[in-house]
Length: 304
Image (cartoon, rainbow, N blue to C red):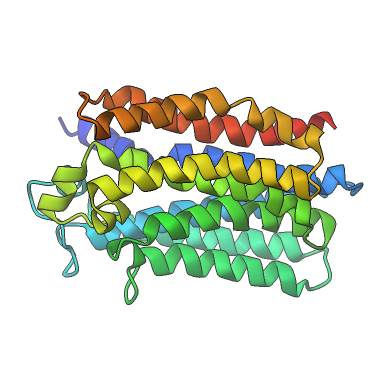
């Protein structure tokens, strides 16, 4: 029994680290490198590696700190015992969460210094990293606790879909370019829609037992309508950006994911109309759409 408990604790730690978010962050960071390469820059692979590790350790630190403050032993815990997250966190030592979070944050700071070691001080890069840190930690920590006010998903989407590729581009190109925003803003909309989709299944548990999020702030029907609007806007913006100067050869691979987006919208619309939800299919479709759009944008950059 004693040998199983540490294994179970480490498995929970892995879940809290959100490996899916980390994989997506790697893809979006690579998009920033890809835009720089597309514009003629020679990638700084070592600097990129150090900065990517900075991003990943910041994400892990933020997730562990959020769990630290949500832990049943925390004086600021708002979860009720019947909520699944309450029971999961109860199996972990609160001090362990803080220790691992601080270790991850220390590693992130160390990799920032390594990334800047052979570079002239770059105010834009430091500003973006500072915004990433502020967004990550203000969302999950007092005094703001943005994720408990229903803004956590929005802040996370901005950090991962916009700031992460912007940091990568600054490292490799030295400045930002309109192409990056045109390619990542549609990803932002799909990412935020995906965060909503993943919270639909646990709506009643979250609402009843104290887990506040964007879905509970908006309520069920408004959140579903917003989800469908965000997905549709992502593709409308992609088309608009092509009209405004985004090269078609960079846009068409992402446009190929439109059938997946339509299928996702139809599922959510069906639930709104009273159909029995297939949550697993909905979540796989939402996750697949985020991953596919990001991958197709990356593929277009490296093929061209």
